[in-house]
Length: 351
Image (cartoon, rainbow, N blue to C red; front, side):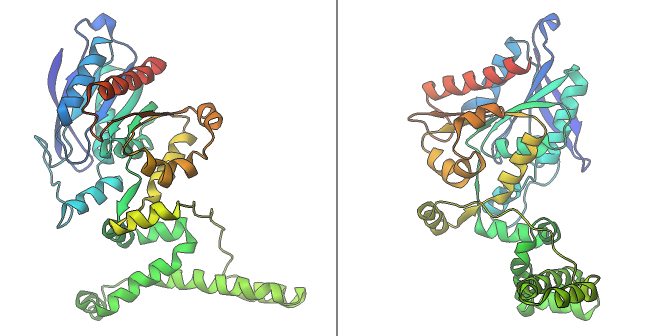
């Protein structure tokens, strides 16, 4: 059985979707699937992927919801987040649609009474699911298909500008990035207008300068005698307190990085951060990669976040499969079979 549904996201937009239910209510199982669209695609998906998956799962007794994000398809709201398509991709790859997915997960749970959810999707749908899972309490696991692990350099720049405060709190080593953002404003007429009108807030710049000054001090202090070092620490403790150390950045294969930079792409650090949050919540993850995309996935994510150790992956509830001779949208019959098997395996574990 299929029925049109609607629900509201955190912005008050009405989102429209299709809820797939088993024909016999008595066969409904305790897990639901939220299948998320890729990129700016409508709820049907490429080659009607979303429809096919939802119908197969409903036949297994798994209620499944697919829907249109804000400003896409039948849903209300604004989907345009910049002047170019790459701006929208950057918005998605920074978790921009996660609020819609959270609302969808809450609706699916309330409407069907399922106890747990599996989130799945291709590309942008995969990353949206990971972001949403950090705000949904009943997620069992994920089917992550061709997870986007890079982001356009221009989109990353806009993200840094909009989230500089969070960046500085989580990564003190990024002080140079924050300071550079402010230096760029020296040639920005609008920035000067805000400064002269008293509307600019330079507290973030001051915090970046404080952290950088402390880093310089930490290089000098070890050279001082112990007594002098203690005296300096006491004197400056309120002004330049020690900075909490951050985790070292994960490396990227230099050849792959050079290739992606030519295309204007850089590593999306947010992916690894949200993945670690998902694991800390005990959620299982099944990665499914097309053979064409797998090298990029491993170079920018797999070799670092997964540590290249299959035994460790499995003990943490992580699985990875690569479908040979497959394009990004899994349009070939053999790749669709492999995708269906991965989805059905995850929901079976959850049920």
